Amino acid sequence: MLIGVGRCPHCSIASPNLLRVWSDGWGSHGDGWATYRCNTCDSIVSILLSWKQGQREMSAIQLWPDAKEAHEDIPEPARTYLQQAYETLHAPDAAAVMAGSAVDAMLKFKGLEKGSLYARIDQALKENILTQGMADWAHSVRLGSNRPRHADNEAPHVSTDEAEQSVEFAEALGSFLFVLTAKINRGIEAAAKASA
Ligand SMILES: [Zn+2]
Image (cartoon, rainbow, N blue to C red; front, side, top):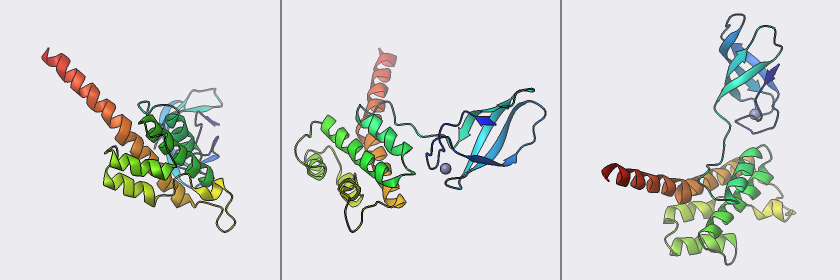
């Protein structure tokens, strides 16, 4: 029994059904690497395991790739929306809606509160909060697609690719607006302290 893997790092399904495809044949106890295939998305995860003699369970110490976590420099509620977008990638409609909410919350945090999400994106470009490239990207991805939200009759769903692109954009925008800025500010502070 393998314990300690909350979600598949590829498709984010909770309590993934993982089938072992390889292990490095470490001895009767100790730590060792093994690879598993997720039964939901067929992707491979490498796991560093700890196993003690007499125990039925092997615990995962480290995963590669690792499960995604929304960066702590992203303000709430955007951070929680982004985290939920990561965790619902196996359910594309939900992930696209959450990615849209994350972007919306990020722009509201920057003081852009009027109108729709797309009006906010245009305003952010005007105020030089976004670059032209970020704004073009935002308009080209289906952020918080209206199709699942309003149960569109013709095309009610977002594809997996579309959801992944939305989540990727929300993540990039969070890095651009908050993570990078916080890193730069910490760098400036550290440099000032070092030269004081
Ligand atoms: Zn998976």
